[in-house]
Image (cartoon, rainbow, N blue to C red; front, top):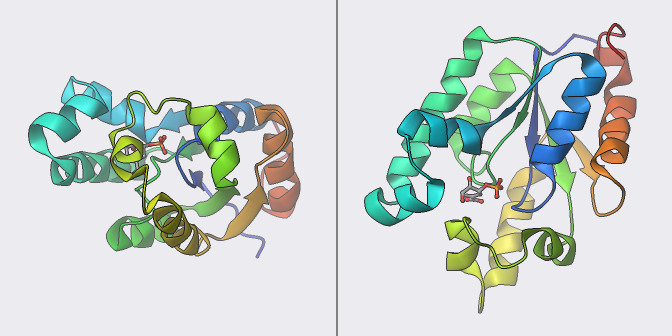
Amino acid sequence: MTDRPARIFLVGFMGAGKSSVAIALAQRLGWEAIDTDSSVEVQEGCSIEQIFRERGEGSFRRAEWEVLIALAHQEGRVIATGGGVFACADHRRWIRAHGVSVWLDSSLAACATRVGTGAGRPRWQAARGVGFRAFFEKRRAIYALADYRIGADRGSPEEVADRVLHRLADRLPTEGR
Ligand code: S3P
């Protein structure tokens, strides 16, 4: 594959490092980094935690979808997707049609270290405890459908971004790097 993607979607579990890697990667490409979680919060005027609590997960997923499709008009973007975006079949199809997907594959232990108490992450809070490992593995099987897989257990966001660049080298512009 040598066609140039207009967007790179970083997918993966909560705490995989998508947001910080998106910033580092966008900087290297001279692109803009977008975080779907932050975009939802701006669009809805409240926190993700609040949306889950007051309106339920379905409402959050609908807001995520609106944020996603608004990206159709924006090119040269590295998008850090919320951990549940790629788990929705419609969202996955849309991502496939509008760019490349890169799975930041991180162990549950590494994600847990980054997430800490899970404050502000209702899905993490809801899943932890019995069945958390099964939930993680189920999600992993879905992330494995991404176009690329990059190990993200070790290294700074900049180092992980460099790994992504290396893998996608023949598909990306050289200017801005
Ligand atoms: C979610 C992940 C979160 C956020 C929401 C739901 C999920 O994003 O979108 O709490 O379902 O995995 P991060 O992956 O950035 O934590």
